[in-house]
Image (cartoon, rainbow, N blue to C red; front, side, top):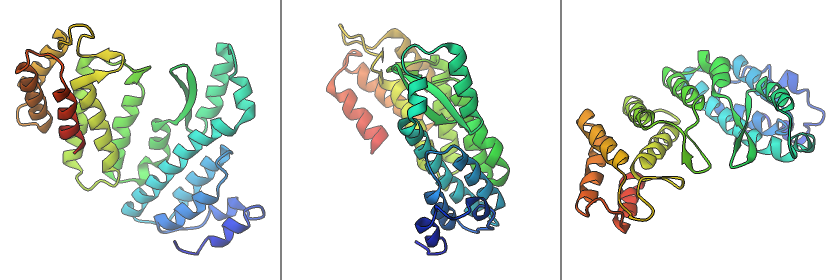
Length: 274
């Protein structure tokens, strides 16, 4: 690591971070070093990080790298802020009136955080619309498209408590969207995240989730809804890699009268994770 900002790490109690973020940095490494110094338990650190980004004198490729660093930073903040904020923990304990929840959400939203629940637990996640608004004009077209897709998906939650919430048609559309993105931006800096979305949706389409099963728990047979969806997907998407995978999967199931077997898990592992 470079040593340009090393002194900040040792003297952050006396450093004027408002002045630091006015620096005209030129690369992601310097940006990352300053992010390391910002207090992850103070929401204003998000504002400081954005200001530093906006003041940077960097090319588009460097800005993409800086934004990737910011994504890691805000994700870490989302985890640590709720975990380490005793006051917020107390406010969210027990039965919380909706008006109070909305007030908390409003405060967090000003810093690009959304308060949501999963399996009965509260957690924070970055608001993609907020990221698009504050960073989009400085990023590459690939990153803007990535954020635009992600923002739309964030508005319609994919799953909760192990159950798929979106319609089958939406799930199929998301597979196609991310497959197209991956094919269009083969050198995208956050390609692994796009691939994660693609894999997540394709796996859910093929094998379901814990509480949205595609195989009947008693008969072990593929349900008719999924069987029909596989047929439609293959028919409507000739030439797609994902359609080829679905066709192979369909043929595998057909050979066993559409009954679940260990071959299902082996197929998913081989085709989606190798």
